[in-house]
Image 1 (spheres, helix red, strand yellow):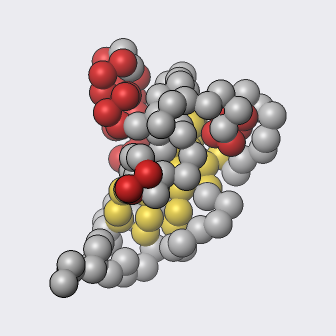
Image 2 (cartoon, helix red, strand yellow; image 1 turned 45 degrees about the horizontal axis):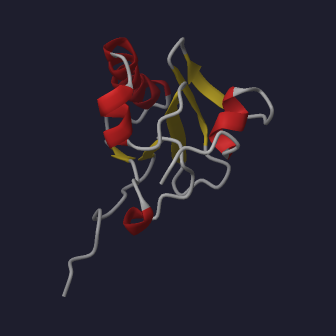
Length: 121
């Protein structure tokens, strides 16, 4: 999957589309998902053209990588889910059902989330 500069998250970063912001710094933007799957469902995205965690780890500068990881924890605290628990999820590629070709981490919380995946039979 290659980076598409017209993807929805790139458009949000450029201010072409609105978002309900949770957190922002020089390297990261976090905002509420428009179709939440849990009471807390926030997307954390880097401010750069990275498709996946692999791409990001290989190409993003260290300060951006550190800010991205730190932002996930900040979002959990801001949303009040760090104490009872939360889940982070990043899909990468077709087999993982990545829908937007821009690295994004989902932060889920606010209720028991159940098992991550059903066991293969």
